[in-house]
Length: 206
Image 1 (tube, rainbow, N blue to C red):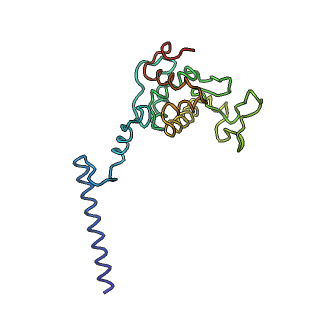
Image 2 (tube, one colour):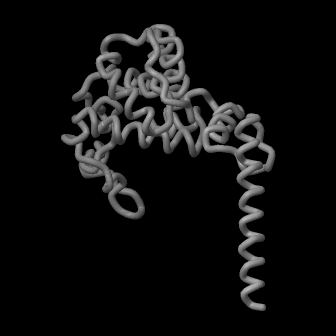
Image 3 (tube, rainbow, N blue to C red):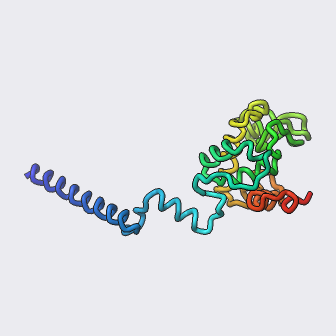
């Protein structure tokens, strides 16, 4: 009797598995989602990217578009590689690099941000206190590389695109860019304009 129940359970499982497989196969062949929630990863990604989200976020791995100055295109391979890794537009990353450092590898801001994407380092110095930046829970950037390490283009792009993707995915494009630069109200419009129009004189007015 117990053996019959086990056999029946196995048969039922195999039947249900076959039905799900057949429906999934038919959905793929027809390009339709016949059972809600059974979209493929590619379809789900495309649906999310086209659902009103900005073209700069959640985009596929597209090459850097034409029109950027040589100071930016010299970093083309890294911009494309790390943007693709983080799921953001290469043009958006290029716009940030242009606005932040104009492609200067050893750029360093008055706030002690470092490198191509002007990333705050674990040893960045707060000009107001003369010490590293402190938050309520301790050093603000303790998990990040040093300033010297951020002068390495690969380390800088890896961290810069990681932070950029985190903020834009969490807050949206405009607010995410504002968070990236520390709250500058004009920054987001400038970066978006640079990434799309590729014209400094018409995008940055300060």
